[in-house]
Length: 158
Image (cartoon, helix red, strand yellow):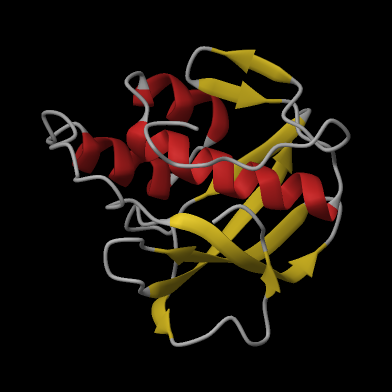
């Protein structure tokens, strides 16, 4: 759990290194990319040391710059009520190569039961997966509500 959000992890696919808010060293596999996408997407928003997460786990470029500028304006997490953050309910790997993976992450919000899909891209850079943000600093080009998990692989635990 990280700030109330369950995080997938795997002995085989990672993360293999845990350094405060930064969890890194994911396998260069579809499952490694999936786990990296969820963990980084969660941590770069919720981490106390979000700047460290962004610097080490988000691809440099206009998206990262825009995110940092926007995030710096936020004083602190306003503390959502229990169940306010989405939990990973399902996923789909939209595309995968050893260099770039795009995954669809379905979050379930316990307070409302709502399901929401984010399309997230990670890129292999150096020795690990890094989140690739949109030019405006957002994580996903599309955010959609869905009514079921049809077409997605359910993720246990939520």
